[in-house]
Length: 107
Image (cartoon, rainbow, N blue to C red; front, side, top):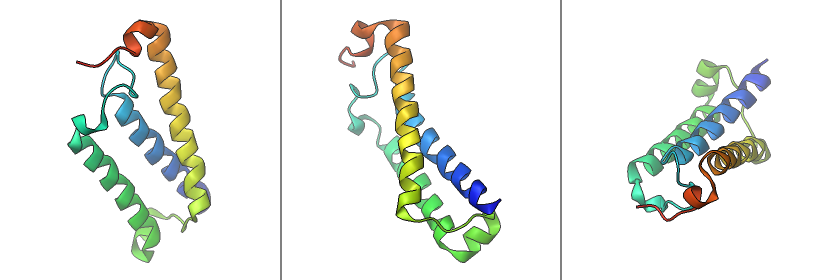
């Protein structure tokens, strides 16, 4: 149960962090918007990842969250799922608003 809880927490954190970058624009592709446009978002995502890693590395954090310690390989699989969520949203933007809008240069 703790292992499943750990994997689900990792999955949710990665997917939500990737989705945050996609939510910067409803129409423009996330790949067309420079990352340096929103330093608060970058800091927030980095802080969320750091707190998650810290909580899973420290015994107190694992006890409170009832999760297990994870290896580097276990971090990579949810990261891949986060990338898939990002790509799915990009496809949605492209199909809904057209490639000309989604891949246009941002303001």
